[in-house]
Length: 388
Image (cartoon, rainbow, N blue to C red; front, side, top):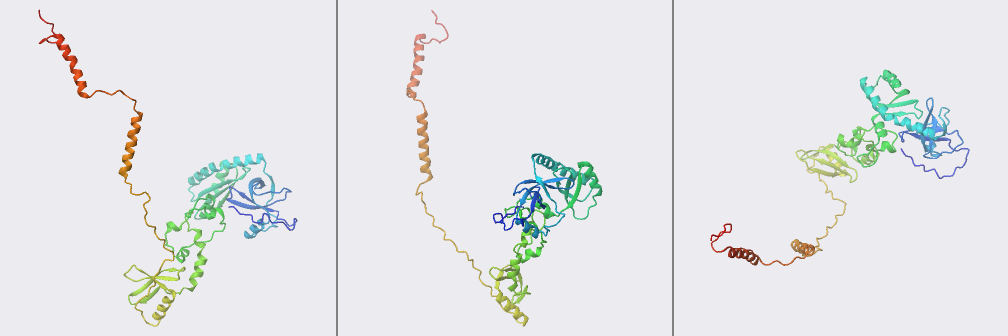
């Protein structure tokens, strides 16, 4: 989760009152925490630093420094003068970075192995992520479970298998999608993976207020729960629906009881449908109140008096078809193409001597036979010698 430091270039009134706490992110921003900078070094956003860990040290990236950190701490209700706040040790060296990379390379194998062990023990849980400390002394296993899981035996097996201290932490489906990340149906990156840190409960009532169809496939997010963005515009819809009349789901007219199907807050219309008919009738708020008051007096009006809904969008005039090419047929183009190809073939052929017509060639082929017959003699077969 990236936070823009909009107080970065503002001058500091009192240097002694400067915030000594920095925000450090771990595992590509999936986890953040605050650490007190007791060193004399000044850190900037993006620096790799070593901080206090469990029986060792951990390595993270500086995400925020300065006065913006105080606002983040106030938002998350963290006390700045808390004596138990962990401290920054030093700037990360090359050796620390190599150790951190080696620890991170073990995480993928640890996820696969931990899931297999949990399956062998027949525990109804799913290990979603494993985070190993930079010095490989501690590992945090994030898991998802519908109920309470007794993993006392599991922790013993994990400790003997991975040779480190094990911590189990249960998270929800929304936290898992925030750690995994992805692209939502809107085409943008998931809110929970970028800026959303507090997950409020979402129910189908929010979709009904916004006249959305209750389709579980479209309303569900990547986590399998209802989308968090259903609450973004809910307050606006609730404010706009305050001037709509209440208890107007059914109104009586001469044709029967009209049933309310939706409310249009943009045009201040209420849409009704009559029995034995699929046609929708838009009514103004004043007309609905009038019909409701008449029904309360025992009077049933004859018609609903629906209004005509016109689109406010200006209809663009379609341009007339203009033939810019002219009266050119495809046949004429094909003929010119054939002529061009024939001309190219003639130019590529080598020049040859003209041949005599076929009749002359036939006559020339018959003459040698006649000359041979004259030399053999009359009535004499070609293969037999003449008699003396």
